Amino acid sequence: MQAAVLTEMPAVDVRERLVEFVGEMAAELPHVRQRENALVYVRGLIEHGGRKSLQPTLFRLGEDGARYESLQQFLADSPWDSTVLVRACAERVAPELGVEAWVIDDTGIPKDGKHSPGVKRQYSGTLGKIGNCQIAVSVHAAGERGTQPLNWALYLPQEWCEDAERRRKAKVPDAVVFQTKPQLAAELVERAASWEIPRAPVLGDEAYGKNTELRNRLDDADIEYVLSINADAVVYDPDTIFSVPQRRPGSRGPAPSALVADREPRQLAELAAALEDSDFQTLVYRTRGGERLSSRFAIVRVIAAHPVDRGRRAPREEWLIIEWPADHDTPSDYWISNLPSDVPPQRLARLARRRWTIELDYRQLKGELGLDHYEGRSYPGFDHHCALVTCAHAFLTLKRMCPKAPRPA
Image 1 (cartoon, rainbow, N blue to C red):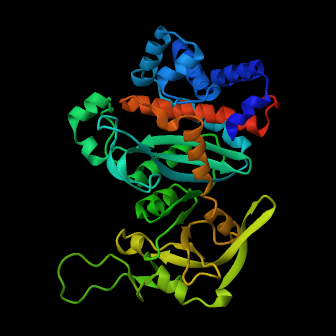
Image 2 (cartoon, one colour):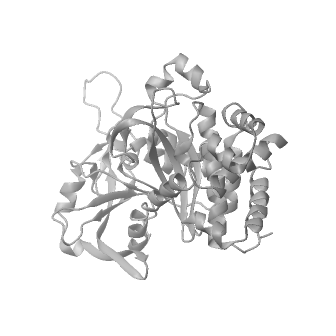
Image 3 (cartoon, one colour):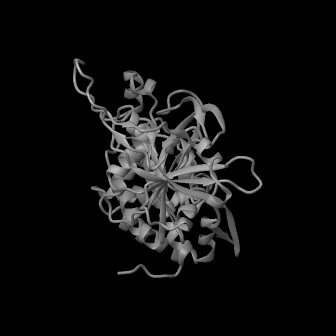
């Protein structure tokens, strides 16, 4: 676990490195008190076990009531931009990771009551059921040497966005409007893509992969993806011919403009069932503890039907990745990808199965750094808390990779 790094170094050395690191990451915060409070908060997240909510953390640090009041204001009311901090952490850590993918996902944070921003009874994959919770959407860089959260967004359900009184009490900015989780994810990825960090294909589960708008936004921004997709999604064969039908003689109204295919599309499950054994190959997708993990994959070209039929976009060939283990009666997973047509199958299989790393990230962010421990009822406070947790994660990631290495010039 990352926090174990701290036990491998003298306490004074750790403290000095932490002060230097947070000072560098928070250097763009406009006020000295904000920079001081950032250091105290990150220290509390890293240096002590137990619950990471504000009061017990400051008690363990030996801080007084004045610091408590100052940190409350720093989290809930101070107008500092969390993006300044998460971007600094991303640009410092991501280049060290050997980045292979960016992963989008969301995590549920159980909450009591109804006043914490975004809280409601809603389904959370983290909980595996409907529960009273907040949901945070995030994007993470995943590489050979570790991971790093790149940015966060709190999902604000439509009923919250339309309730002026709840918004006022939770200090939700006027600029925040309702966005779906895929829309939030697309915005986070687009923002991170403008930073000085290594780009990599975006991975995501079916909740994101089946969203045509998300895939279109990423492709329009020249961002590659390998996204899980549902078995009942519909695609055309790559040799399908599309044309605009001629206007019928004597018809009125505008001339036809929508493309029409020369054949019907097929569901992915139907397409997979029609493949031959020779269309599948065994590919190694991960090495773990010296063990090579492999499965049976078919990788074929397709054209997604929804963007053409409903979105009226030009047909675009993509990769369809089908995993069908030899001991399964049906395929276990499907993915769709806009990676180039000459990409090696091995890389597609590895990326398709790479998304699991985000679950480890969430486990560390919650279990060690208190991502889910924020008890305030302020929208900016939750945003600031996520940024400071990201800073703590960044410090531990660097120390875990090479605890004694000096920072490169």
